[in-house]
Length: 144
Image 1 (spheres, rainbow, N blue to C red):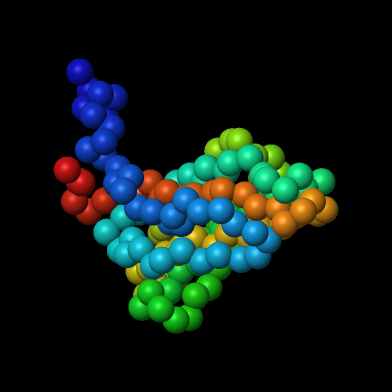
Image 2 (image 1 turned 45 degrees about the vertical axis):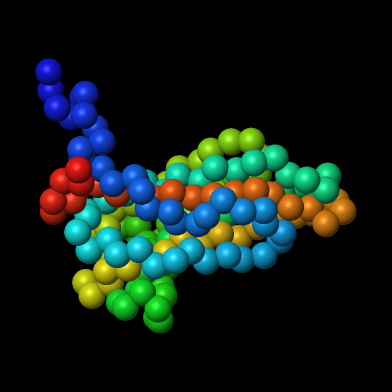
């Protein structure tokens, strides 16, 4: 058997909470800093629940920011064309994902965080339960 096919858990680190599950009103939420210096790529996985408060529309947008020290100087993570990486959803009860290449971070940036922007139209105090995990791969040392 090929190890990559039957033991994928040995090749990725999944225990990286980008944003803890929580009920969110409209606004912006930033996750905690995660040290990604030992990894080369990853996937942002967002789980989005059903909205409450009967909004007419809802949008949740996720992006990534990087920093030198994990506390200041946060800047948008970009793709090869220089565009900010982001993924959005206009529906609840689903998951969305965003692949990212950590080789494209600024040379001295070792920390990553998730940025979530939630917006609603209409409704009575609408909220949405969301949560994000980061799956990191290409580690210098395989996670066990």
